[in-house]
Image (cartoon, rainbow, N blue to C red; front, top):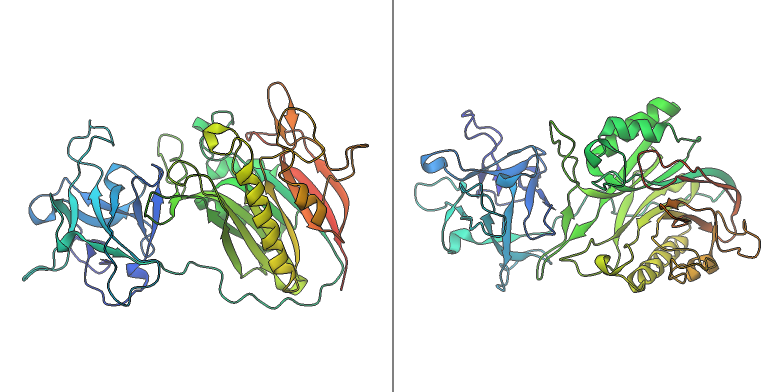
Length: 449
Protein backbone atom coordinates (compact mmCIF):
# COMPACT_ATOMS: atom_id res chain seq x y z
CA UNK A 1 0.00 0.00 0.00
CA UNK A 2 1.18 3.49 -0.86
CA UNK A 3 0.29 6.89 0.58
CA UNK A 4 -0.91 9.30 -2.11
CA UNK A 5 0.83 12.54 -1.21
CA UNK A 6 0.07 14.59 -4.31
CA UNK A 7 -3.73 14.57 -4.36
CA UNK A 8 -5.35 17.96 -4.95
CA UNK A 9 -8.74 16.86 -3.58
CA UNK A 10 -8.50 17.34 0.19
CA UNK A 11 -10.86 14.41 0.79
CA UNK A 12 -8.44 12.12 -1.07
CA UNK A 13 -5.23 13.51 0.40
CA UNK A 14 -2.96 10.83 1.92
CA UNK A 15 -5.30 8.01 0.87
CA UNK A 16 -3.87 4.51 0.67
CA UNK A 17 -3.64 2.72 -2.67
CA UNK A 18 -2.38 -0.66 -3.88
CA UNK A 19 -0.27 0.65 -6.71
CA UNK A 20 3.49 0.48 -6.02
CA UNK A 21 5.83 -2.23 -7.34
CA UNK A 22 8.73 -1.26 -5.04
CA UNK A 23 9.13 -0.07 -1.45
CA UNK A 24 9.97 3.51 -0.55
CA UNK A 25 8.99 5.84 2.27
CA UNK A 26 5.43 6.07 0.89
CA UNK A 27 5.04 2.30 1.37
CA UNK A 28 6.56 1.90 4.84
CA UNK A 29 4.51 1.71 8.03
CA UNK A 30 5.24 0.86 11.65
CA UNK A 31 2.79 -1.30 13.58
CA UNK A 32 1.42 -0.18 16.94
CA UNK A 33 -1.03 -1.56 19.47
CA UNK A 34 -2.84 -0.51 22.60
CA UNK A 35 -4.70 -3.84 22.86
CA UNK A 36 -1.82 -6.35 23.22
CA UNK A 37 -1.62 -6.88 19.44
CA UNK A 38 -5.27 -7.93 19.22
CA UNK A 39 -5.70 -4.76 17.20
CA UNK A 40 -3.02 -2.85 15.32
CA UNK A 41 -2.50 0.63 13.93
CA UNK A 42 -0.41 1.41 10.86
CA UNK A 43 1.65 4.59 11.19
CA UNK A 44 2.91 5.97 7.91
CA UNK A 45 6.61 6.74 7.70
CA UNK A 46 6.05 9.54 5.19
CA UNK A 47 3.23 11.38 7.01
CA UNK A 48 3.86 10.24 10.59
CA UNK A 49 0.12 9.64 11.02
CA UNK A 50 -2.02 6.53 11.38
CA UNK A 51 -4.10 4.93 8.63
CA UNK A 52 -7.71 5.93 9.27
CA UNK A 53 -10.92 4.32 7.95
CA UNK A 54 -13.20 7.17 6.87
CA UNK A 55 -16.63 5.89 7.92
CA UNK A 56 -18.32 9.29 7.71
CA UNK A 57 -17.60 9.66 3.98
CA UNK A 58 -20.18 8.54 1.43
CA UNK A 59 -20.24 6.61 -1.82
CA UNK A 60 -16.95 5.19 -3.05
CA UNK A 61 -15.13 7.07 -0.27
CA UNK A 62 -16.93 5.33 2.57
CA UNK A 63 -14.40 3.41 4.68
CA UNK A 64 -11.49 4.72 2.57
CA UNK A 65 -8.12 4.51 4.33
CA UNK A 66 -6.10 7.71 4.67
CA UNK A 67 -2.80 8.19 6.56
CA UNK A 68 -4.05 11.12 8.60
CA UNK A 69 -4.87 9.91 12.14
CA UNK A 70 -3.03 11.89 14.82
CA UNK A 71 -3.60 9.24 17.50
CA UNK A 72 -4.45 5.57 17.82
CA UNK A 73 -8.21 5.95 18.22
CA UNK A 74 -11.09 3.76 17.09
CA UNK A 75 -10.90 4.53 13.38
CA UNK A 76 -7.14 3.87 13.42
CA UNK A 77 -7.36 0.31 14.78
CA UNK A 78 -7.63 -2.83 12.67
CA UNK A 79 -8.02 -6.44 13.71
CA UNK A 80 -5.46 -8.67 11.98
CA UNK A 81 -6.04 -12.28 10.99
CA UNK A 82 -2.85 -14.08 10.04
CA UNK A 83 -3.48 -16.73 7.39
CA UNK A 84 -1.71 -20.04 6.93
CA UNK A 85 -1.06 -19.24 3.27
CA UNK A 86 2.50 -18.90 2.04
CA UNK A 87 3.46 -15.41 0.84
CA UNK A 88 4.23 -14.92 -2.86
CA UNK A 89 7.58 -16.11 -4.20
CA UNK A 90 10.29 -13.51 -3.65
CA UNK A 91 8.74 -12.09 -0.48
CA UNK A 92 11.30 -11.25 2.23
CA UNK A 93 11.85 -13.78 5.00
CA UNK A 94 9.32 -13.33 7.77
CA UNK A 95 6.54 -12.09 5.46
CA UNK A 96 3.00 -13.00 6.47
CA UNK A 97 -0.33 -13.12 4.64
CA UNK A 98 -3.12 -11.43 6.57
CA UNK A 99 -6.48 -9.73 6.45
CA UNK A 100 -7.36 -6.50 8.22
CA UNK A 101 -10.83 -5.64 9.46
CA UNK A 102 -11.75 -2.24 10.84
CA UNK A 103 -12.15 -2.33 14.61
CA UNK A 104 -14.42 0.75 14.69
CA UNK A 105 -17.85 0.58 13.06
CA UNK A 106 -20.78 2.98 12.96
CA UNK A 107 -21.94 1.39 16.22
CA UNK A 108 -19.76 3.46 18.51
CA UNK A 109 -21.45 2.01 21.61
CA UNK A 110 -20.21 -1.54 20.91
CA UNK A 111 -17.28 -2.87 22.87
CA UNK A 112 -14.06 -3.68 21.06
CA UNK A 113 -14.72 -7.41 21.45
CA UNK A 114 -18.27 -7.13 20.02
CA UNK A 115 -17.46 -5.07 16.96
CA UNK A 116 -17.48 -6.84 13.63
CA UNK A 117 -15.78 -4.37 11.34
CA UNK A 118 -15.54 -4.64 7.59
CA UNK A 119 -12.51 -6.10 5.86
CA UNK A 120 -10.09 -3.77 4.12
CA UNK A 121 -10.24 -4.26 0.33
CA UNK A 122 -7.77 -3.18 -2.35
CA UNK A 123 -9.98 -2.12 -5.27
CA UNK A 124 -7.86 -3.24 -8.18
CA UNK A 125 -10.49 -4.27 -10.73
CA UNK A 126 -11.18 -2.64 -14.09
CA UNK A 127 -11.70 1.10 -13.78
CA UNK A 128 -10.54 1.22 -10.15
CA UNK A 129 -7.51 3.07 -8.83
CA UNK A 130 -6.32 0.62 -6.17
CA UNK A 131 -7.81 2.57 -3.29
CA UNK A 132 -8.07 0.77 0.05
CA UNK A 133 -11.46 0.76 1.74
CA UNK A 134 -12.90 -1.02 4.78
CA UNK A 135 -15.99 -2.29 3.00
CA UNK A 136 -16.02 -6.10 2.55
CA UNK A 137 -18.04 -8.59 4.59
CA UNK A 138 -16.09 -11.64 3.38
CA UNK A 139 -12.54 -12.46 2.34
CA UNK A 140 -11.44 -12.78 -1.26
CA UNK A 141 -8.28 -11.94 -3.17
CA UNK A 142 -8.79 -8.20 -2.70
CA UNK A 143 -8.85 -8.61 1.09
CA UNK A 144 -5.55 -10.45 1.44
CA UNK A 145 -2.33 -8.52 2.03
CA UNK A 146 1.32 -9.46 2.50
CA UNK A 147 3.04 -7.92 5.50
CA UNK A 148 6.73 -7.61 4.65
CA UNK A 149 9.39 -6.81 7.28
CA UNK A 150 11.56 -3.79 6.58
CA UNK A 151 14.97 -3.13 8.15
CA UNK A 152 14.64 -0.58 10.93
CA UNK A 153 16.76 2.52 11.41
CA UNK A 154 20.07 2.02 13.16
CA UNK A 155 22.02 -1.20 13.08
CA UNK A 156 23.97 -1.97 9.95
CA UNK A 157 27.71 -2.45 10.11
CA UNK A 158 29.07 -1.95 13.61
CA UNK A 159 31.75 0.79 13.57
CA UNK A 160 35.28 -0.34 14.34
CA UNK A 161 36.17 0.97 17.80
CA UNK A 162 39.09 3.31 18.25
CA UNK A 163 41.84 2.92 20.81
CA UNK A 164 40.47 2.18 24.28
CA UNK A 165 41.87 5.08 26.27
CA UNK A 166 41.47 5.70 29.98
CA UNK A 167 38.27 7.63 30.62
CA UNK A 168 36.01 8.81 33.41
CA UNK A 169 32.28 8.83 32.66
CA UNK A 170 29.21 9.92 34.56
CA UNK A 171 26.23 7.62 34.08
CA UNK A 172 22.63 7.96 35.25
CA UNK A 173 19.67 5.57 35.14
CA UNK A 174 16.06 6.49 35.87
CA UNK A 175 12.76 4.73 35.34
CA UNK A 176 10.64 7.81 34.60
CA UNK A 177 7.26 6.01 34.83
CA UNK A 178 5.94 8.05 31.90
CA UNK A 179 3.13 5.78 30.68
CA UNK A 180 0.00 5.50 32.82
CA UNK A 181 0.94 4.29 36.30
CA UNK A 182 -1.42 5.70 38.92
CA UNK A 183 1.41 5.50 41.48
CA UNK A 184 3.24 8.29 39.66
CA UNK A 185 2.54 12.00 39.82
CA UNK A 186 2.26 13.04 36.19
CA UNK A 187 -0.75 15.02 35.00
CA UNK A 188 -3.61 12.52 34.64
CA UNK A 189 -0.97 9.79 35.27
CA UNK A 190 0.68 10.45 31.88
CA UNK A 191 3.90 12.42 31.38
CA UNK A 192 3.87 15.24 28.86
CA UNK A 193 7.20 16.33 27.42
CA UNK A 194 7.29 19.63 29.33
CA UNK A 195 6.75 17.92 32.69
CA UNK A 196 9.20 15.17 31.81
CA UNK A 197 11.92 17.62 30.77
CA UNK A 198 11.39 19.59 33.96
CA UNK A 199 11.83 16.48 36.10
CA UNK A 200 14.88 15.20 34.22
CA UNK A 201 16.58 18.60 34.16
CA UNK A 202 16.19 18.94 37.94
CA UNK A 203 18.09 15.65 38.42
CA UNK A 204 21.02 16.03 36.02
CA UNK A 205 24.55 15.73 37.43
CA UNK A 206 26.85 16.47 34.53
CA UNK A 207 25.96 13.20 32.76
CA UNK A 208 27.74 11.54 29.85
CA UNK A 209 25.28 8.61 29.59
CA UNK A 210 21.64 8.35 30.67
CA UNK A 211 19.45 5.23 30.69
CA UNK A 212 15.67 5.82 30.69
CA UNK A 213 12.97 3.19 31.23
CA UNK A 214 9.18 3.47 30.84
CA UNK A 215 9.76 6.16 28.24
CA UNK A 216 7.50 7.39 25.41
CA UNK A 217 8.93 7.47 21.90
CA UNK A 218 7.85 11.00 20.96
CA UNK A 219 9.59 12.48 24.00
CA UNK A 220 13.03 11.44 22.71
CA UNK A 221 13.72 14.47 20.53
CA UNK A 222 12.33 16.88 23.13
CA UNK A 223 14.61 15.38 25.79
CA UNK A 224 17.54 15.60 23.39
CA UNK A 225 16.91 19.30 22.80
CA UNK A 226 16.57 19.93 26.55
CA UNK A 227 19.88 18.19 27.25
CA UNK A 228 21.64 20.23 24.58
CA UNK A 229 20.19 23.51 25.89
CA UNK A 230 21.06 22.59 29.48
CA UNK A 231 24.59 21.24 28.99
CA UNK A 232 25.73 23.22 25.95
CA UNK A 233 26.95 20.03 24.25
CA UNK A 234 25.56 17.79 21.53
CA UNK A 235 23.36 14.83 22.48
CA UNK A 236 21.73 11.91 20.74
CA UNK A 237 18.66 10.27 22.30
CA UNK A 238 17.68 6.87 20.88
CA UNK A 239 14.54 4.86 21.60
CA UNK A 240 13.52 1.19 21.36
CA UNK A 241 9.94 -0.05 21.83
CA UNK A 242 8.54 -2.92 23.82
CA UNK A 243 6.17 -5.24 21.95
CA UNK A 244 3.19 -7.54 22.00
CA UNK A 245 2.28 -10.29 19.54
CA UNK A 246 -0.54 -12.75 18.92
CA UNK A 247 -0.23 -16.34 17.73
CA UNK A 248 1.25 -16.40 14.25
CA UNK A 249 1.73 -12.66 14.17
CA UNK A 250 4.78 -10.37 14.21
CA UNK A 251 5.96 -8.16 17.04
CA UNK A 252 3.79 -5.04 17.34
CA UNK A 253 5.02 -1.93 19.15
CA UNK A 254 3.22 -1.23 22.41
CA UNK A 255 1.76 2.27 22.41
CA UNK A 256 2.13 4.76 25.26
CA UNK A 257 -1.28 5.68 26.63
CA UNK A 258 -2.53 8.87 25.01
CA UNK A 259 -1.47 12.05 26.73
CA UNK A 260 -3.36 14.13 29.28
CA UNK A 261 -6.65 15.85 28.50
CA UNK A 262 -7.73 18.01 26.80
CA UNK A 263 -5.66 17.14 23.71
CA UNK A 264 -5.05 13.39 24.40
CA UNK A 265 -1.81 13.70 22.44
CA UNK A 266 -0.21 10.66 20.86
CA UNK A 267 3.12 10.04 22.60
CA UNK A 268 4.28 7.24 20.32
CA UNK A 269 5.47 3.78 21.34
CA UNK A 270 6.43 2.71 24.86
CA UNK A 271 9.90 1.45 25.75
CA UNK A 272 13.43 2.40 26.75
CA UNK A 273 15.80 5.16 25.67
CA UNK A 274 19.50 6.00 25.82
CA UNK A 275 21.01 9.48 25.84
CA UNK A 276 24.65 9.72 24.72
CA UNK A 277 26.88 12.22 22.96
CA UNK A 278 26.01 13.11 19.38
CA UNK A 279 28.99 11.10 18.23
CA UNK A 280 26.56 8.19 18.20
CA UNK A 281 25.35 7.07 14.78
CA UNK A 282 25.02 3.31 15.40
CA UNK A 283 22.41 1.79 17.67
CA UNK A 284 20.36 -1.38 17.71
CA UNK A 285 17.64 -3.23 19.61
CA UNK A 286 18.09 -6.71 21.06
CA UNK A 287 14.89 -8.60 21.85
CA UNK A 288 14.93 -10.46 25.16
CA UNK A 289 13.09 -13.67 26.01
CA UNK A 290 9.83 -12.70 27.72
CA UNK A 291 6.57 -14.23 29.01
CA UNK A 292 3.61 -14.93 26.69
CA UNK A 293 3.57 -12.25 24.01
CA UNK A 294 -0.21 -12.00 23.72
CA UNK A 295 -0.52 -11.01 27.39
CA UNK A 296 2.84 -9.60 28.51
CA UNK A 297 5.31 -7.02 27.27
CA UNK A 298 8.15 -8.38 25.15
CA UNK A 299 11.21 -6.71 26.64
CA UNK A 300 14.18 -5.30 24.74
CA UNK A 301 17.69 -4.03 25.31
CA UNK A 302 18.89 -0.94 23.43
CA UNK A 303 22.60 -0.45 22.67
CA UNK A 304 24.40 2.58 21.24
CA UNK A 305 28.05 2.86 20.19
CA UNK A 306 30.62 5.56 20.92
CA UNK A 307 33.35 4.22 18.62
CA UNK A 308 36.02 6.89 19.14
CA UNK A 309 35.97 6.03 22.86
CA UNK A 310 35.58 2.26 22.29
CA UNK A 311 32.48 2.35 24.49
CA UNK A 312 29.16 0.59 24.02
CA UNK A 313 26.23 1.47 26.28
CA UNK A 314 23.18 -0.77 26.70
CA UNK A 315 19.92 -0.16 28.54
CA UNK A 316 17.23 -2.67 29.48
CA UNK A 317 14.02 -2.99 31.45
CA UNK A 318 13.43 -6.58 32.55
CA UNK A 319 10.02 -8.18 33.04
CA UNK A 320 8.21 -7.46 36.27
CA UNK A 321 7.78 -10.15 38.91
CA UNK A 322 4.60 -11.71 40.19
CA UNK A 323 2.01 -13.96 38.60
CA UNK A 324 0.20 -11.01 37.00
CA UNK A 325 3.32 -10.24 34.95
CA UNK A 326 4.11 -13.80 33.88
CA UNK A 327 7.34 -14.26 35.84
CA UNK A 328 6.48 -15.18 39.44
CA UNK A 329 9.70 -17.14 40.11
CA UNK A 330 12.11 -14.98 38.12
CA UNK A 331 12.83 -17.49 35.33
CA UNK A 332 12.43 -14.92 32.56
CA UNK A 333 14.34 -12.22 34.40
CA UNK A 334 17.18 -14.68 34.94
CA UNK A 335 17.16 -15.50 31.22
CA UNK A 336 17.03 -11.81 30.31
CA UNK A 337 20.06 -11.16 32.54
CA UNK A 338 21.94 -13.98 30.83
CA UNK A 339 21.03 -12.62 27.41
CA UNK A 340 22.12 -9.10 28.35
CA UNK A 341 25.41 -10.53 29.62
CA UNK A 342 25.86 -12.33 26.29
CA UNK A 343 25.16 -9.08 24.44
CA UNK A 344 27.90 -7.39 26.47
CA UNK A 345 30.32 -10.22 25.66
CA UNK A 346 29.47 -9.87 21.97
CA UNK A 347 30.56 -6.23 21.93
CA UNK A 348 33.55 -6.83 24.20
CA UNK A 349 34.82 -9.40 21.70
CA UNK A 350 34.76 -6.65 19.07
CA UNK A 351 36.87 -4.26 21.13
CA UNK A 352 34.22 -2.26 22.99
CA UNK A 353 34.07 -1.59 26.71
CA UNK A 354 30.44 -2.10 27.72
CA UNK A 355 28.51 -0.07 30.28
CA UNK A 356 24.98 -1.34 30.82
CA UNK A 357 22.19 -0.69 33.22
CA UNK A 358 18.50 -0.11 33.75
CA UNK A 359 15.56 -1.34 35.74
CA UNK A 360 16.10 -5.08 36.17
CA UNK A 361 13.10 -5.69 38.44
CA UNK A 362 15.23 -7.93 40.69
CA UNK A 363 17.01 -7.46 44.00
CA UNK A 364 20.81 -7.98 44.31
CA UNK A 365 22.34 -11.35 45.27
CA UNK A 366 23.12 -10.33 48.85
CA UNK A 367 19.64 -8.98 49.56
CA UNK A 368 18.10 -11.43 52.03
CA UNK A 369 14.64 -10.09 52.84
CA UNK A 370 11.35 -11.17 51.27
CA UNK A 371 11.58 -9.53 47.84
CA UNK A 372 13.05 -12.51 45.99
CA UNK A 373 14.40 -14.09 44.03
CA UNK A 374 17.89 -12.71 44.65
CA UNK A 375 19.63 -14.97 42.10
CA UNK A 376 18.69 -13.13 38.87
CA UNK A 377 21.90 -11.07 38.74
CA UNK A 378 24.41 -13.49 40.27
CA UNK A 379 26.24 -14.00 36.96
CA UNK A 380 26.18 -10.28 36.17
CA UNK A 381 27.96 -9.48 39.45
CA UNK A 382 30.49 -12.26 38.80
CA UNK A 383 31.41 -10.99 35.33
CA UNK A 384 31.11 -7.22 35.77
CA UNK A 385 31.43 -4.43 38.32
CA UNK A 386 28.26 -2.82 39.67
CA UNK A 387 28.39 0.75 40.88
CA UNK A 388 27.09 0.09 44.41
CA UNK A 389 29.07 -3.13 44.85
CA UNK A 390 30.94 -3.30 48.14
CA UNK A 391 29.20 -0.31 49.71
CA UNK A 392 27.45 -2.33 52.40
CA UNK A 393 29.68 -4.17 54.89
CA UNK A 394 28.99 -7.89 54.88
CA UNK A 395 26.75 -7.63 51.81
CA UNK A 396 29.00 -6.48 48.95
CA UNK A 397 26.50 -7.42 46.26
CA UNK A 398 23.81 -5.07 47.50
CA UNK A 399 23.30 -1.31 47.50
CA UNK A 400 21.11 1.68 48.17
CA UNK A 401 17.41 1.27 47.47
CA UNK A 402 16.07 2.70 44.21
CA UNK A 403 12.40 1.64 44.42
CA UNK A 404 10.26 2.98 47.27
CA UNK A 405 7.09 1.29 48.52
CA UNK A 406 4.77 2.38 51.30
CA UNK A 407 6.33 -0.11 53.71
CA UNK A 408 9.87 -0.66 52.41
CA UNK A 409 12.48 0.25 49.79
CA UNK A 410 14.50 -2.10 47.55
CA UNK A 411 17.26 -1.89 44.95
CA UNK A 412 16.18 -2.91 41.44
CA UNK A 413 18.05 -0.30 39.30
CA UNK A 414 21.67 -0.88 38.29
CA UNK A 415 24.72 0.42 36.45
CA UNK A 416 27.34 -2.19 35.45
CA UNK A 417 30.76 -1.74 33.85
CA UNK A 418 33.67 -4.06 32.90
CA UNK A 419 35.23 -5.98 35.78
CA UNK A 420 38.44 -3.99 35.23
CA UNK A 421 36.63 -0.67 35.71
CA UNK A 422 36.55 1.20 39.00
CA UNK A 423 33.51 3.08 40.25
CA UNK A 424 34.59 6.20 42.08
CA UNK A 425 31.05 7.03 43.15
CA UNK A 426 27.58 5.53 43.21
CA UNK A 427 24.69 7.46 44.70
CA UNK A 428 20.93 7.29 44.79
CA UNK A 429 18.88 10.42 45.28
CA UNK A 430 15.88 9.51 47.48
CA UNK A 431 13.62 11.82 45.49
CA UNK A 432 11.40 10.06 42.96
CA UNK A 433 9.74 13.28 41.88
CA UNK A 434 6.81 12.37 39.65
CA UNK A 435 8.22 8.90 39.02
CA UNK A 436 8.05 5.86 41.30
CA UNK A 437 11.81 5.18 41.17
CA UNK A 438 14.80 7.05 42.53
CA UNK A 439 17.47 7.98 39.96
CA UNK A 440 20.84 6.25 40.37
CA UNK A 441 24.16 7.93 39.47
CA UNK A 442 27.64 6.53 38.92
CA UNK A 443 31.08 7.76 38.00
CA UNK A 444 33.13 5.01 36.37
CA UNK A 445 36.83 5.02 35.63
CA UNK A 446 37.70 2.88 32.59
CA UNK A 447 41.22 1.60 32.05
CA UNK A 448 43.00 2.19 28.77
CA UNK A 449 44.23 -0.57 26.48
